Image 1 (cartoon, rainbow, N blue to C red):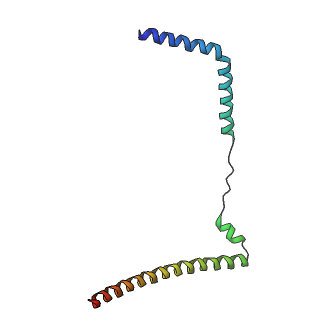
Image 2: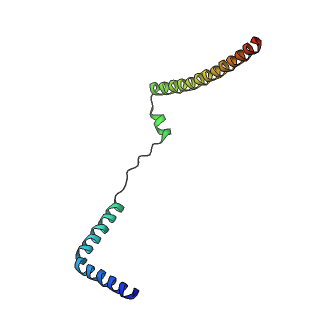
Image 3: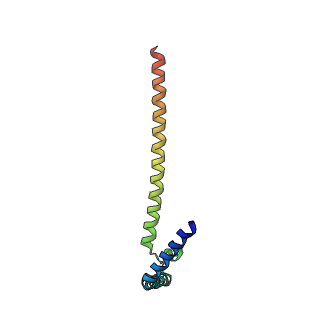
Length: 105
């Protein structure tokens, strides 16, 4: 019984191939051309050489770059100091609360 089902399925597939063979060939040809065109296309990649760019800067650009670097560094240091001070204030408040609770007893 399994053999007859397989045979009938094979017959249906062959019949469909005969009916739609030309359309399938055209689709296959289009697919092949699309794949070939994808392979032919290339992507343009621009590579920046940082050392050459720095050499092309004029004095004004160099000064501005250095100033911005210093500003970023100072900003990071300021934020770190602020966080440290906030932690110290929280620790001091906890200490005061504990002291006031123990003295209040």
